[in-house]
Length: 183
Image (cartoon, rainbow, N blue to C red; front, top):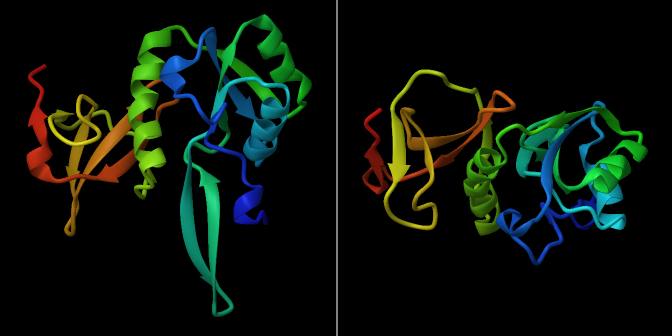
């Protein structure tokens, strides 16, 4: 298990947002449990990437264990041309490289997740939902983000979907910070 300081950064280069990356987006479908190692290798080759991760807290033998785990297990998003794609393949940690058909849509879907993670808000994996009310955030740091609103007994959550992967993540949100989108 890695120490907190041994985990790769969520975004590489760390001083940029994924919206600032230039080039073509690719999705690396990694071999099992290779996401962090691949991110480190991409960083050493100066290949821009995004690896969304969230904290998981568990108890084992009376000890509390905190682990930083990929939000979308098995996937690392990276940007560049054919040279960067080749570097990703050279890591020998990929099962497949998935081309991104709709570049703008992928960035639009990933940006709110990046913002929430960089704010330090707790984000957790969520089942991908096909049905439900689509909403737009009208206030706060996620303003403009779109997703599905779900209600649990304790809280309201905004589900942020990454359509290409068929996966999603959710974050707690105040109900008065969203408006209904008429489809």
